[in-house]
Length: 225
Image (cartoon, rainbow, N blue to C red):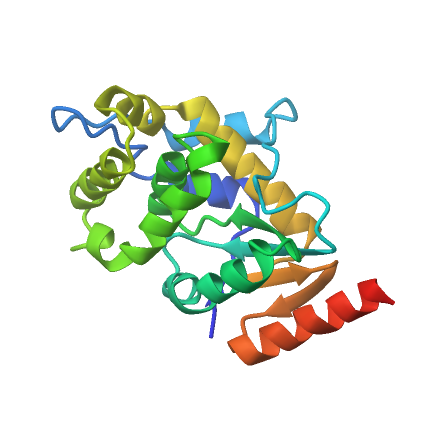
């Protein structure tokens, strides 16, 4: 199963993300970005997009791109069950180059992305794993204060400093780039649900591990011939 993505337009996405503002969890104070400011910033052609963060060998014969949301339960389940097998048997062995591309359904997904990206590329996948594995815990009662505080805790557990976490959660420019990147990539690949996988250029919906493994093995066999 997957979560359906129904908001790809810039104004619609940024309107959702700006509702309530990006939250700065320091001394219980909120930092607000108005919907108009967010929409204007992201609508600008000058907003820079972010490069992919690659896990695995750059010259791996097969490339797997996952479109996933930190607030999507099916994505969290995939990262708990299927992803460890992919990493152990294909990424770590040099067969697959893996790229995660973040999808945002709501402002909380952006907050989680800001934490995941806070340690830079070297820590990105480790922090992402923590966010997925603790999804139910950090979402908690669903209140913005709870979510922001819990995401802060994850950042600190990952070895980030208090100042780092605060700066990242208030990084408006980074958030604008993240949303611009999401809009471009998801639009180009016609992503309408999460998780969705692009395996060597072919789009696939969420599936059982055996089916996923077969596709990978078939692609590897093609590359070997």
